[in-house]
Length: 145
Image 1 (cartoon, rainbow, N blue to C red):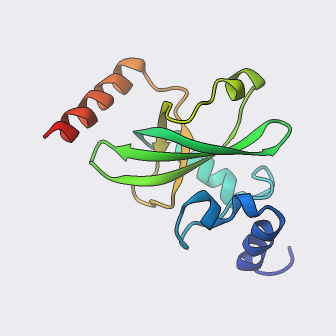
Image 2 (image 1 turned 45 degrees about the horizontal axis):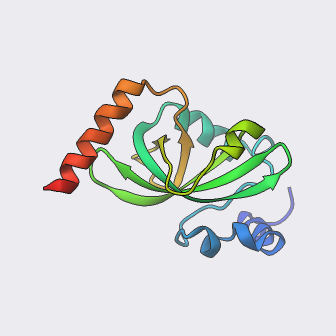
């Protein structure tokens, strides 16, 4: 591997300005979007941890198509059961059908790593609908008070 990790992240932002930290709406602590998550050991480890992460709800803000797989980066405003709000970034491979169903304002269940809080989230496709509804009710009741 050549260069430092910072230089690689800067290179990705130069190649794809729409995937820069500023464009995604995250702070300087965001590690960046991996050029190829299958080749990045950090991305593979992160994705494995996210599969078992804590459940939260994310409201879809926007998305960027990374390649024709289609691999997309979803930007979500995430609200946790603990009342923490942050901009979450999900790097996902979607089917064409899933991609056509994306709409800003859509609420999606996501998983995040509470101990890390690095803006990365993953769609919680395995989440129990009853648990997701319970979380939505809890968040809604907190907003009413």
